[in-house]
Length: 591
Image: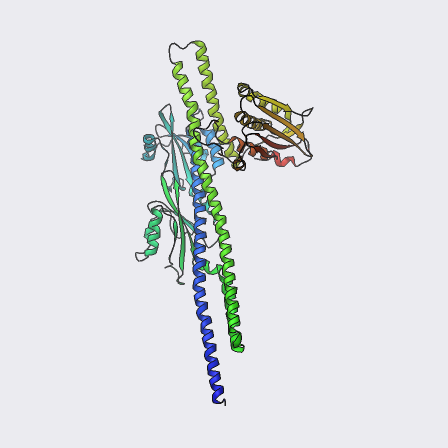
């Protein structure tokens, strides 16, 4: 039997142990709440950035693909003889989101399209009471996007209507069906299997649900009970065009966990949708499982040390707290790094969207300028006092502006082929000097007009390269035209070539205005211009250098630029030597 003092000491020790264990339990519960709150906030912020990234990507894809149809519809030559069939084929293959592209004439009848097996030739909108959207674009002259619905072929998708006018007269519409299956492919970015994406329109109807829980075209509110206040508030915020985070109880689960949701708007011409990204509350638990493992381990060891070494309790608790703080800091740091990466990607998308907006403004300006010149010239030709010499000058001016418009459309189609990896290359051994001579013929007049001296330093005999001759000439013309534009009157342009081990290096230099360092890294980006304002001194749509880069790399070469402000620029590109021992099949089959 224990004596009275021993029993008292045992009681005191037991009380101290219980107090220490109680303290451990208390601090563990408090830390658990704080850790979960911090990790959940960081996780939802990361999910919101991911949602913004997906919605921005989808928005850019849809708007950019409709822009291709707008550019085709605004062709100054009017409706082509083939009723757009060749253009439809190019855009269909490059865009990769259309189920079918059709041309509907002014009477509302389908007269052409691609692919032909999906085209209902002779189908009349008025006879089938489907003319509302057709008449709407005739009245407004604006692009119209219809709500998604099921087509006659069983395809669920949105209808795109682009009006076609020729000399102010309505000629019909370019009509496209954007299949929801093609939109679904854009959601592959959500690689996390616990995530699920859904898409609502401004009325709360379900356009797409990755989980398969909800049927397309049904009202999302029909799936929400009246007492699910948090969920109703989230959907109301979505259809009003807001973005943010939220959570609501999962009433369909026996586990009683929350559903976390992030949402962001998607604007597509006249349609305003909302993209939602949901994930179960257990996703947060998985993130902090390593913290919990260490937490339980340290707590267990602490209890053992308290039982046998009561005097060491303070130091054990101190180490435990320090370890826990380090782990939380580590996880927080990892989440912040992920957030920063997603923020950077989102900023890049916004910058691309800004460049696209500037490009639309600039293309509008570039389209209107030659159209105005052609209109003025044609009006002058109608005057009775117009003599034969003046008539020839006006016709020449009209012809130049038609060529200018055609080049702009060709550039847009070229950049689309490059981005979709569908540009064809006819590779052969060609004389570099001959290609350069053809290019110089194209830019000789503007160079003479500015009294610019073009010097060529080419080895004798001129080297041969393995390339596509027409596309190499296109690269030369782009680089030389840029040099002429940005070189002052009386300036100098130098073209030189030298042989390397397996390649030929070509450089095009000028003593023009040069390029600022902050613009240098973006100079090959599509739509990028150093001066994109409407009052810029030099015309163009910002695609020449991007096309040149795509062509050179497509032929197995590389291109770079060196420049100093106010001293000039040098564009340097390399091409494979002719008959050099390489796998030519890869280049011949490159598309």
